[in-house]
Length: 155
Length: 75
Image (cartoon, rainbow over all chains, first blue to last red; front, side, top):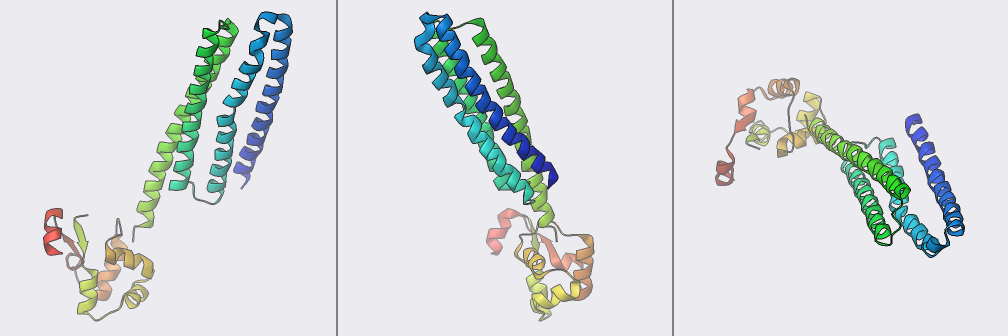
């Protein structure tokens, strides 16, 4: 199953990219705290909030890994695959809501720097794109599952 | 579904078992059982033709349209 093997490698690479992003973010926070002592007390809570926001991202990667296993089993058009896609869609939504709450919190604390807004906007745009894509896949897989059942129950 | 398959009636009239029909038609017993119990969603003309040939009957003898409101009365 070469195609899913490639996707699995990409998924593992993505895990490392997110982890690396967290490390870079932590160092950036450290640097910001040194340059702007007035916001130093917020760097740890903000970092922890962002780190917590990656929980749905990692959960989504685990769900995607499971989905690839289902596809490898030849059960792509099944209720199991559709359920996993629905979970993935909800995780994307959860992540988007979490980062929106985070942005509101940061604005309330007076930490609404334009760069924060740009990063938030980019994250939400990616989230919306992925949400739409997964919702579309969910519909396609549901149609596929229905055709498959029809085909199996054609005598 | 409003289409009722009267395969069980036809088999009983001919004193034929489902396995024998499956053997002679060339489809699996599981598929034929799906057809008999009304689980099947569709039937191919080739399958219908083969069943009709073995049972020496017409498609109309096997398939019947019964509106849903009459089904409960019949059963």
